[in-house]
Length: 373
Image 1 (cartoon, rainbow, N blue to C red):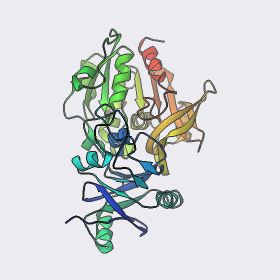
Image 2 (image 1 turned 180 degrees about the horizontal axis):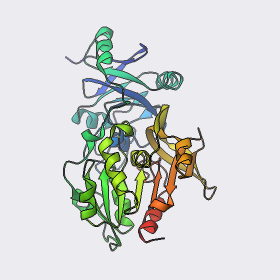
Image 3 (image 1 turned 30 degrees about the vertical axis):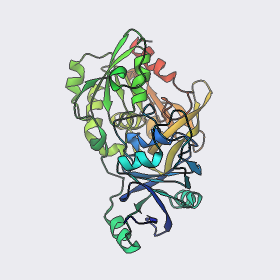
Image 4 (image 1 turned 180 degrees about the vertical axis):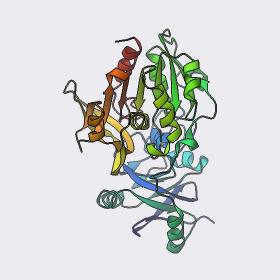
C-alpha cells in the first residue's frame, strides 16, 4: 500500500508534508526553484537539472499535460519535483498524458500541496542546499540519514551521467519529432561537445545551415580536429564546471584552432580553459524571465536560465576577455568574447526551450564567426 503522504526535508532541518504524485520513491539532491509559469515538461527533459530537486514557484502545474513533441533529450534527468498544486486532469489539445503519469513512467517522485513560497524563501535566505523527498513512508530520522550521505554539488562531475556514449550526426527527422519539410543547405560543419545538450539547440543550429556531429564530453581534442569542422560548440549541462577537468583540458588544446561557441556549462568550461575561475551562486538562476543586457549594443533581452555557477568578472578582465553580457538582476557575467582566439559564449539558454525567443539570433553570430566575419 502506497503512502498517502510525502515528506520534503531540507538540509537545514525544515520539514514539509504534502501529497505524493508521480512515482513512489525517495530522491535526494540539491534543491532549487524555477520561476517559469510554463515549460515544466522541457525542464524535466533538461539534462542540466541532473542531481537536483526542482521547486516550481508558479502554483498551478500540470494544467496542459505533457506531449511527445516538447522533448529536449532522451530522458528525464532531475531527481524530484515539487509543486503547490498539481492538476491530474490536463486540458490541452496537444496533451498525450498527465504530468504525474510521465513522472511515474520515469521513476521520478513528486510532492504537491506544500508551501512552495516558503520553500523558495528558505532557499533564497539560506542559499543552495541539499534536500530529500520521500513518498514511501520514511520517517524524518531516516530522511536525515539520507541527507547526511548526499554529496554537495560543488566538486561533483554530473556530466559523465548525461553525456552521449557514442558520437552521432544530428538528424532532426530521425528522432520522429519536429519533422522539417525542407532542411536548409549545409553551410558549416560543427562538432558539438555533449555536456548535457538540449535538442532544441541542435534543431536551431541545423536550421541555421549547420551539420552537427555530437560527441561525448571526454572526446579527445585530436579527434575533434580529425573531423575538420568549421566550428566547435560547447553545450549546456549539469553540476560544477570545475569538476569537468577532461572537458577543460580538451578545450584548452582547441583554443585558437577553430571558432568556439559555448552555452551555459559550455560557457563556464571555456572560461576555465581560458584561465578564469568559476564560483557557486547563492541560489542560482533558474527561470525563463531573466533580463540580460548586451554590453555591445545596450539591448536588453529576456532570457531562459538554468545554472548554479558563474564566471568571475575580475578574471575575465585580467585575461583581457570582453564581457559581452550582464545579468541585470545581480550583475553577474552572462557572456564573454575573446576575439583573438575566435571564442564566444553566453551563460543563458538562447534556444528558448522553454522561454522567450529574444536570443535565438545568437546562433547567427556563431555562423558569422565560422564565415570569418
